[in-house]
Figure 1 (cartoon, rainbow, N blue to C red):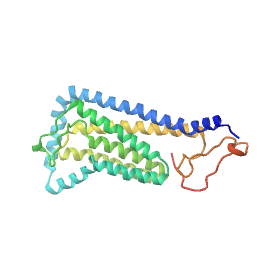
Figure 2: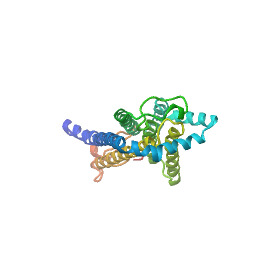
Figure 3: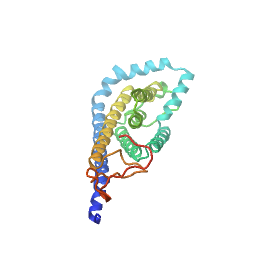
Figure 4: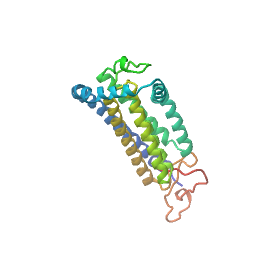
Length: 275
């Protein structure tokens, strides 16, 4: 029988260490992304604001104005609202709840929630630092927005949330064609969300490009954090990641068939989790 200190050490190694590594990586990565947002804003303010307007932003906006029609404007406005301050939290909650139910683990809640929190922070800091003005209302489709333009919050937050959700969903499917379909759908949604901001005249194209780049960088860090968690977790115990039904699978002593607490515990039911 294990003593209390041994039991505490075992629990610490199996639960605290892997999750601590996950949160530390997310925290450090989030700080890096916020710093990138600040540095990007500084570079943007000194360089892109002069060159970008003439070479990319204004021509792109002018082209978007030529494509507009009342019906298309309404459809794009309805779509872009999905990535807004109300639509995206609702969508993220639905997708996270679905992934949590399917995987029977807290993984989706931690990763999607942590990723979204830092993307919102990066968006807020970038807007406050640059304070770039949006396109004129004469060139935009109502309802108009008054917050600073850089970076595009719709684009950045959509890239992060959908990117992490697609990654977690791909862990649950085994067929390559299903994974390709998920990734393709995610990319189309993210690209369309960014372009919708330019089409409606709510953002400059460079605002959207920076949102895509920052979002992809943050998604990469989140995936790295999860893979690190996965490696440490499997170093501590074999088998799939913990779930609600089976939070702990011990392996100590399984090789020699030792009985008692050291013996491996086999699951009695419940769906397996990937990743």
